[in-house]
Image 1 (cartoon, rainbow, N blue to C red):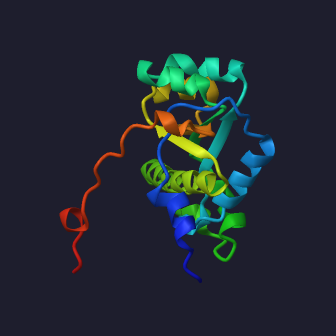
Image 2 (spheres, rainbow, N blue to C red; image 1 turned 90 degrees about the vertical axis):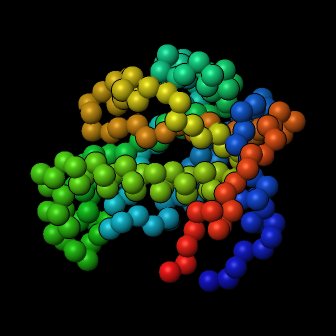
Length: 196
């Protein structure tokens, strides 16, 4: 592997920001497919890939989401060109014979173990959510991830069969940099890390 250059590091990390105000600029389905394609290469435990994504582009779809949003998240979400609803499939293990093909019995590790299923699905969909944000940035999109919503209401509206559960939301588009808040502080290495 070769280290990426400083421009790429800035795009993905040091200059990237969470956006709340969006330009009136469409995000194509082709771009969303590119985003997924990049994201799906990221590792998950046993290649379980539990993330499921609904891309809400139409105003009608976003209006269905609006009642579940905290008031402070409504305007920016309605304005975003795309709202990605990131969830996790609680039956991900059914696909392990295909996705983890060198161990055809991997599915049996999960069968009947609800807590293990939910923990694995939530953790790995969260990891995939991180890849999702980085993939969006790599493709020139801005991201506005958030957790300020009623999960039960979202699940009832968008995942009524109960198999998929919502994890978090991520607004996508081309952000208005003039509306960014000042960057907030970050912990220093010595405050949160130890080398043992």
